[in-house]
Image (tube, rainbow, N blue to C red; front, side, top):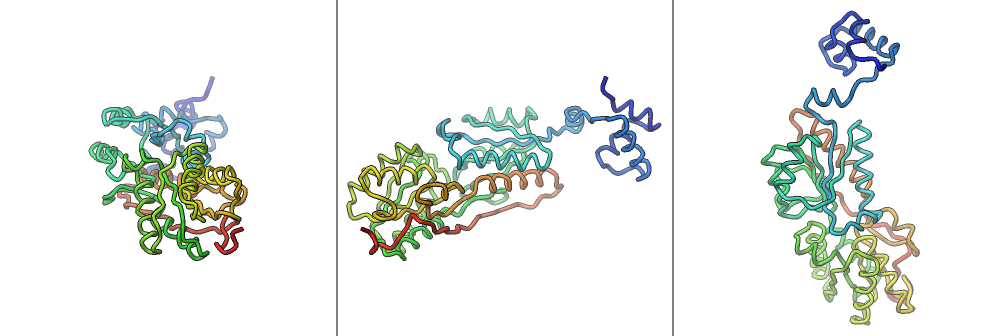
Length: 341
């Protein structure tokens, strides 16, 4: 039979409340009493009942992620899965549980989740510029952090990637190499229609780049499936035979670009230079290793979990705005235009 809190209290000659304070590191007892209770706890091999403690405190000691997937297959992509594992790791480091929601929700369902004490706070992904979840959570006074950001982020906590400047940086690299006809392949049209931040901000970066470098605007919204992006990019190459370089947003679009070029009997970088934007760390495993501007899902997920948990455990938390700057990593998928064969 397992040892209970009352058993420890009886042996220590103190109240159960005093034992609870000692075990949880709370104030209100002397250090000598605390150490004696902890000695008895170890001697009796007492394990606190975490669920009962959580119920008593009104906290679940758990955080949740709402990641509404446009396709169930998307979570199999390493880039997307890295965010999930990063959040799970951040939660584990703080001894928090982690729950994942991937389905579409409406305000009523989100309210039910918040009031059902499933989690103490939420992390939001696939954030739109006018995300309805933000308004709902604010009305409920429910703690949350966004991976992504809205149009108006006053009093909102977020961590996001600077997509606009990342795209401009990708173009600057290719222009410096002498490329003048550059194709841009980005998130699906459905993402743009849904006002999702990555799609909107990538498009703004594209517009800024073609304006700054006085380039022909070659713009395509692509499927995130490798086969779909391959077909899109192959058609674009045939439509724009003078194109010598490609900017691809997302891992699978970059792989689709390589497949499209190879299907036409060409190679990267001998015939087309390729820069990947917002790629995971796996870009150096692709052949050829990609010149890319990464955004590390695991690190960002872990940071988001840490921000949320700090928010939950601070009486007057400060608003956190983190916009990660793009950092170009030049590998072997780009070369000067004059060296094209």
